[in-house]
Amino acid sequence: MKSVLQLKNVHKAFSGVPALAGVDAALPENSYISLLGPSGSGKTTLLRVIAGFEQPDGGEILFAGQRIDGVPPHERGIGFVFQNFALFPHLSVAENIAFGLENRAVDPVTDTRVVAAKVRDIIGLVGLSGLEGRAVTQISGGQKQRVALARTLVTEPSMVLLDEPLGALDANLRTRMRGELRTIRERCGVTFLHVTGSETEALAMGDTVLVLDRGRIAQSADAGTLYGRPASADVARFLNCYNIFSGAISDDAFESPVGRLALGGAQQKSGEPAYAIRYDRVAIRPLHASAAGDEVRIEASFVASEYSGAAINSFFTLDDGRVFEVETHLSHAAPETFEEKARYALVWKREDALVFV
Image 1: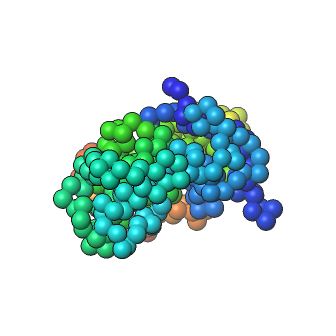
Image 2: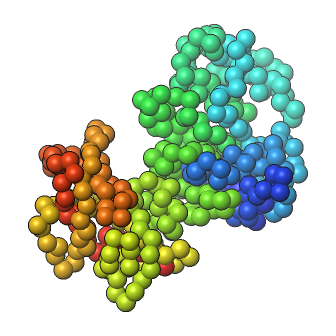
Image 3: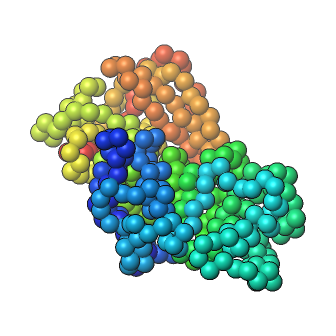
């Protein structure tokens, strides 16, 4: 697939502290890209460098095949949607959307009939019909999000950058807006780069997910690959769905703080030895239950369970004091009850584990 944006060894530091430490990435055109990373990983800095609000200290940024590092933001053909929406409170919905067309530095639209037609079309596209004359102080958070997006899309950018676009919305609205943003992007046929600190949001929305760790791209993959085969223990930690043990391989087992864990799953080079098993791959059994030949078994004490709607997450303490989590989907079976502080066997298939070497 053709790339709309390429980043080549992009560096940026503030007061000598690296924010971007050599970012390399290629973003495909006409796609939804999620950029996932913890606080301080450089997500917003990378977005601002792409937009032109910050200049990189080194490296190249190519957009549609042309170098744009050094090009002013308004000449890049890239739209930006701010986390707080940055709407003008004294303007109506339609006036906010028209503002970018009428006041842009390159080719401002002065024909009021053209402006009105473009605004009308984009309002229909983002689902705001009937709210054109409403003040932006009188509409909901989700509607404000769509106004901010429409104000960017009406200028017909080739790419749109979204900085934590769902962060200011409540949980129900965030879920609904995920689908709406994807639908709007597909109708427009432009690339969206969506920055988020939520692994759930990143996996649900991105055709491709980029994981940023300490100023570098740690992994670039589709959601299924990222979820099932994270490239390193750090990436697995960001996904918040793996139990991870430190240690080292010795013969046919992984020596961990809770004992020898038999090998049998996928092994991949990452630089940091670790053993990972996903929360939903673990079964909870009575303490006297033994493991089959293709299984790994450890013992732990039950702490508590947390109901999340479609699943129950059960928490256990291991003998070394760490917390071990198990996710049970309620579609599989009725929820079980466990006795607080009682000991249980936690069992999983050897082949379900990921071993980083």
